[in-house]
Image (tube, rainbow, N blue to C red; front, side):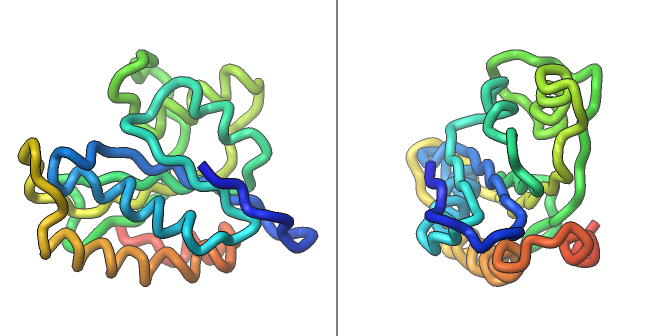
Length: 167
């Protein structure tokens, strides 16, 4: 997890939550992109990498102006999807396999107010075999996702982000 140094006054704060299992091939796309984001060291971006989303991640959103969830997805188009999401009631709030919408719902319930605008970047994954790393095609999709998301993180404006939605 990284919190940047001091951001310029008025710069929106972004929280990036990336998750996945790097021991399962393309499932490591979420952590790989999250580490790339963290390495740039943008002062207004906090990058959080985990094995899976958990209830406690709702607290990590406190003070954020924008949220980006990053994960591998079998359902995403090639090379990735970038969509907006929102809190949704009725999803299971367990400690295993939470959806971004459930994390946002927990935020609403715990904080007593709506969560910040939230987006999901689903990187197309195809090979999830245990004991493998990212394949060549996954690395290409990772590079495409990085080229797409970096300018958004450098200019954290919800209107700009919504203009770039892919689905």
